Image (cartoon, rainbow, N blue to C red; front, side, top):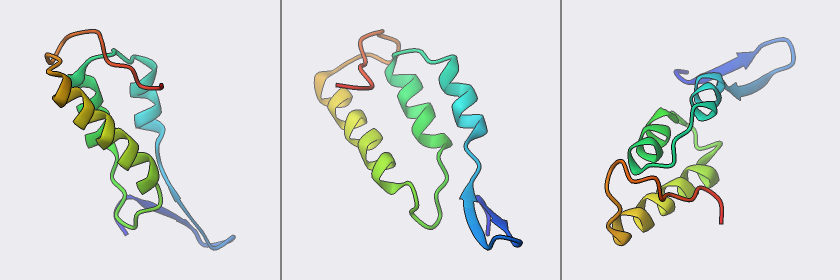
Length: 78
């Protein structure tokens, strides 16, 4: 299935998040980057949905505060 890696020897499913982690190393604390990071996560089965929900809640809070696209005011972790 697209977005999943299946190890047939150990019968395990996994997600490849190397590109997301590489992108997070160059992280900027802007609304634009948070939206970019959320869009990079493709989770067809819902394995990481608890984390995706937290990012989407952060995006809602950013919108409610009226933070501009390139303002460096976004906090990832409380």
